[in-house]
Image (tube, rainbow, N blue to C red; front, side):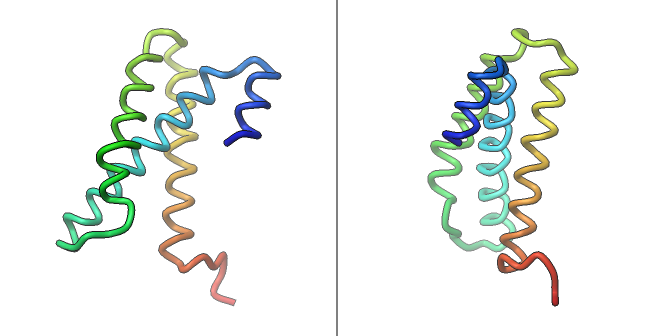
Amino acid sequence: MIAGILVADRFGFPEFLLVILGTLFLVNGVLHLASSVASAKYNPGLLTGTLIWGPLGAVTLMQLHGNMRGVRFLAGMAIGAGIQGAVSLLSLSGGKFSKA
């Protein structure tokens, strides 16, 4: 995240990075909550995802909505959701990229 912040600041896209991170945090919190509800069990990250990261992501997105062009805002959200999807798939596979 630090490298991303430095690059975003240097090349002039800090709001775009905030949309990406806000979406990533929000989706992560929702996925932890959904996973716990679906399995009826506590999973690591449930409390922090639900009480800290999800709301932080939601507030970040609400603050930035309207400050950016719609297409750019949606592109940032798509990238954030894609990153979270890739991380989720990787964690579900036990950290393995392939079955080899």
